[in-house]
Length: 114
Length: 114
Image (cartoon, each protein chain N blue to C red):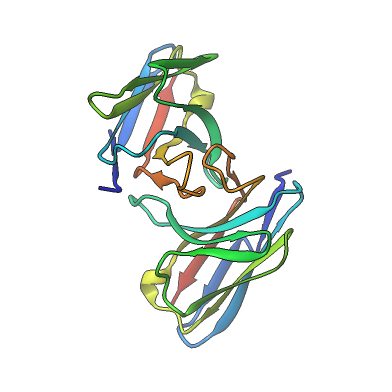
């Protein structure tokens, strides 16, 4: 049982839909992250939250909108996505935001945009 | 300058053999180098990490070798087992001032055959 739970595991959505990805961590960590994983590409950091405040936004298009209501929950709201947004979206958490705080990843949401 | 280049893209090793994955970086400010292991359907998990003040770090069958002058580091898996079949990602970050913003390599898909 992973300490970071992501739902749903799979999501298929049309380009005009609005959907949300959910992440919950049970590790008592203070930082949470969204990563995008595409085949044959490095993991791309999208957003970082530390103590519920957004501290990093890596020039992500506005069609991706994160929300962190508390230190245990993280959402990624999706609207008017493009087919190239199809990927595995990974949530992670860490005890702090120092580089030597290991990232604990969830198992991801496989998103397909049709 | 932020890239981490990883090779090979895929690797097939016989059971009991040595698996070697190489990474190279450009940014001399990087001073923390973790390796993550990802099994199919799972998120990545921290395997082992090294700081550049040492040239080698060993944990069980897994060893990181680090060459600061060449800006290269590698993962060696001794006595490779079928259970080691996974995708391995190298990464780099800065311990101070970098937050927890890891720069990942593109991954190496390892298959250990019987």
